[in-house]
Image 1 (tube, rainbow, N blue to C red):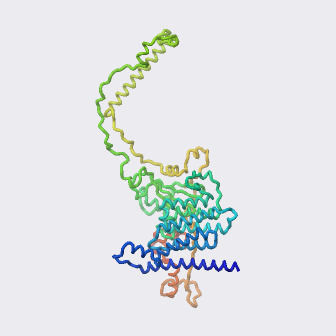
Image 2: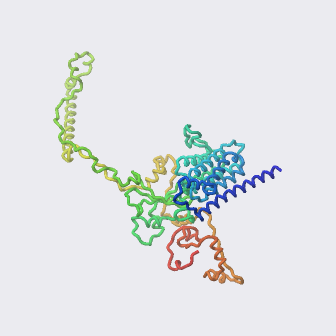
Image 3: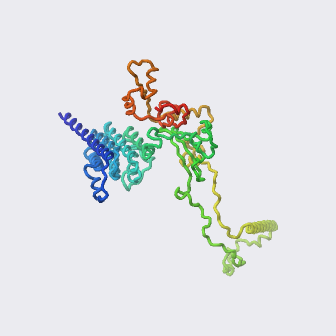
Length: 537
């Protein structure tokens, strides 16, 4: 009987969460379809009260988020089934588009999600189970949904710190700083002990989403492609050194790049030439990164100043120093003494006579000859230094020339700068003391370009192709079935309506996503005249 009551309570809770989500969605859609315009005579307080009224989508969103989050970290945190339903409801609320989104409420929701993860991970070992870890994984996924739907949350320093601390907790099992004021523990000082491998994978997935998707989704290519469509050929066409023309093969483009493998998982293609849209004479390197999450293109510059100060000169042409005076004054010939004058008036003792004088040493003919030779060398060196100083003064404009900076260097090894700044090159690795994480690839090997093309044709997500045919009654041959799609008049309007409900038509020669064939997918090609006249898919 108890099990039936518990099942009934859970069913009611799930129905309540689903109804609450539908209520907020309906209110948001209704406000978008039928926007309520306020008269110009309304005061600011009246507008605020209308936004926060009980029947507005904004008010429902705020109150629903507060209610679910507050219950999640208080009374629902021990009930794993209810927690899963609450996390699903929060993920649905995050995806709802509301015109007046409360940033503070969204930040508070992410903070409560992080607190929920911290509480569940800190429970004693007997309480850890598969169901508990499932709720932690669901909480990480819910946090990822909130950050993707509201990317401005990561611009807040406090929110970013909270999220990264929870990611660190999920990956390593502990935080670097448990409480405020405690010393920070480095990564090598902590024991790698996550709650479970599923929890660690969920935390790593959240970190990947933060670094690659938050604020970048959908990409400029649309939701069809999650990575960049630029390859070696496209980048080389935009370089200043490319003379132009369409006769650019993949082999010619690959020869301009330098390829490296980082930690046996990521391929780096480095181009040490600035692109055509770059007007600054800064050392520039363009990087094509091929990793488990697709292909991405980045252009980096070594700048001594930020971009908003790049127009200023590094060294002022006239710093405003005073003009040097050529008159150095009267030079007094003063004979410097090694000891004070009163030393000569002090009577000597036997200890002072223990060191023989120079005159007594010159009584020896051999010592006198060496002394004369040394004096001659000193006089010659003095004469040479005096002549060199006078010649230097004649060559310069004055005794105090103006200090000018050396000319700017325009020859850079940008690939070496990039690899060394990111820690891939070091003196220890070059000397063989430690293992290098970087491996250079030989682009002259046969099949290198083909292997790159095969790697680019491997999608980071699953793509399926479905063929839909219209078959009239009595048609049996392939020619009859295929001839139905030659014109819209040969098929039923309901069939066309059915196709439109599945998605939208695209031009395969301009579609950046999956087109049904590897040779035309994930790239933008120029169709021929015959292909341009062909119908779209």
